[in-house]
Length: 169
Image (cartoon, rainbow, N blue to C red; front, side):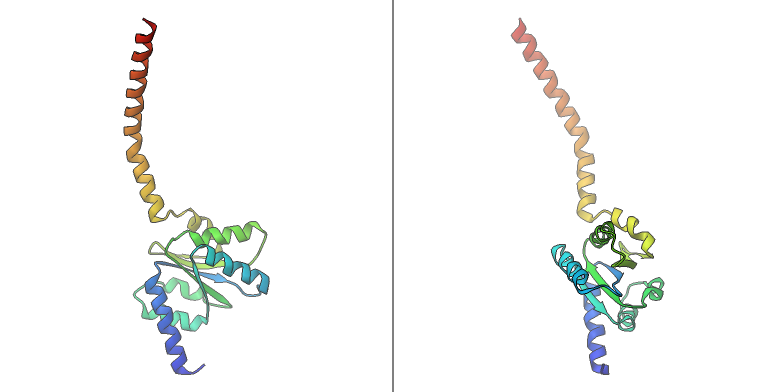
């Protein structure tokens, strides 16, 4: 690969790092064409962008970015796919789905999610449990609505009881 091409690839990866809030490094070494296609379809369906990268070029893109991801560098070995997303837990859920089908690959190498670096396949459950911004907002709204709904329910029950007493008289 010519130096100009490498510079272009590094710049493109840098743009993806800016565009997406989270990314995962996935081990895709030895995957057959059918499994790779299934992974790509799953990524497309979940609005996740997958790019197979040269490890050294991705490391240079990380170094050029403002992200603090030095712990991930040792994971940049073998055949690596980078999965970019704006919802932190989507790729983890996709990988758990693949693991449920008894597939060894794709496997998590490392991830950058919610401004934290996760290294190792053992972090998959932690990543899958992360809540997205929308899920957290929904939880807060539900927590705020709960006391109001209890008061309204109590008032409705009291009015129904009065109506029943009036009907019985």
